[in-house]
Length: 309
Length: 253
Ligand SMILES: Nc1ncnc2c1ncn2[C@@H]1O[C@H](COP(=O)(O)OP(=O)(O)OP(=O)(O)O)[C@@H](O)[C@H]1O
Ligand SMILES: [Mg+2]
Image (cartoon, rainbow over all chains, first blue to last red; front, top):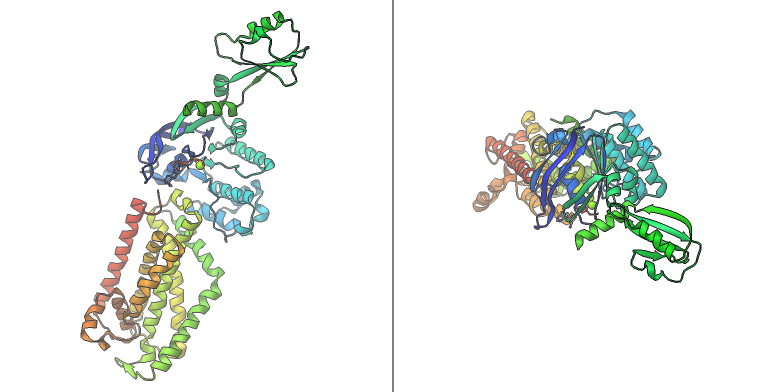
């Protein structure tokens, strides 16, 4: 597979002197979904804005579909659809007009059938003649998506597409994203909902303070960074952890009849054998065993904390 | 050239105009009629003729210019300011369009609206006075160039403006005085000599003089100079806009 989006040492220093991007490099394969995670102010929107031509880069280079975003901006931008983080819409226009406008602006010939398809997919067809002011917040956000999809982009940027969207609709949106992926559209999305990245992304990138900490296959990341927990359920009730087990990373469940052991699956010794032996020596008997792997969210929180210290 | 984008912007801007067509139509008709009542009837009865033309007819070119210039500026300024205000400018900045295409869409629409108003005023005026147009081709040319160049100026004002007050500021504080002092309602030759010289630094003088020449065949300044002035002004505005987009001044961070 070839990279459809290639970012090399991208830097952005805002007019006030603030360094929002400190040399980001990233390749995105055609047809993949990349989720960008990072705390507020990390530089996610700046990265997207710079690729899309809304802010000018201070250094580095970007190509989209082989077109340089500065010298061949027409080629590059024709491939891109952008759903911005802020809900920016002209209040007094109708849904249909704004969406048609977007298609024309991107140099596409009028195609009412395509516009209808997009509006139907996003459940906006009923509202097509409504003024934007009469829509709810979630509907407005979907109008933004409709605008971006109106010109059939090959690369779609979604800057927090599901902020302020209800649970049902979020699932719908994930389905839409999956359909787009099936059509071969490359998708870069930012989100603060880690379960969202977990549910739909192929790869996950983590940004903090203008630096890309890592980009990895979601599965690999979870496997590599993952901590596991082993819950040992006992037949006995305990008031405290037995002295023989005190040296281990153990927690006693509130009910007193289970011990939770945290370990790193990649460590040379996980310590599970020692734990089980210790339990036997303390004269306890096992009722059940259960393991649990940490979610992307926990990994993410660990990463960002680790970076801050 | 992304002509589809130019068309999209143009249509989008014109749609707003059509939604408020009655307002767009009524206000110039009303104001022109008022000018004729005040200037034509009340003052005009004391001023017999200016340069061989009845005073009522003499002020028509100035009246048209006054409205066309203010309308071209305010429409273009609002047209580009509003996307900045609502944030929808992100779409213009991320679209495969260059500065010329954006300008053609917005300025073209603003110039069309101004032209419409100009024609409405001319028609209204023809109910009050006998109008003869000696050089119709030149008249149309002056009118078109005025619509275009001041729409360009308005576009710059809209990009410069940081709030709605500033949007009104330039038309109100600079352009309206220049038009009133530019010989809309009098001939430069009616002024004392010192003021005649000072007036020559007012660019609007050249416009109104040339425009009036196309009606009555008399001018305050040579017609060629008028044409040169307005062409120069158009180029100046275009150059400024080119620079704005090149540097991203006030639009691209
Ligand atoms: N126009 C601007 N001028 C100056 N600084 C800016 C500008 N836009 C953003 N910044 C700064 O750049 C940094 C990164 O902002 P950015 O919007 O890219 O963050 P983000 O990762 O998208 O955050 P969030 O999750 O809150 O959307 C922030 O510190 C912000 O204050
Ligand atoms: Mg952001």
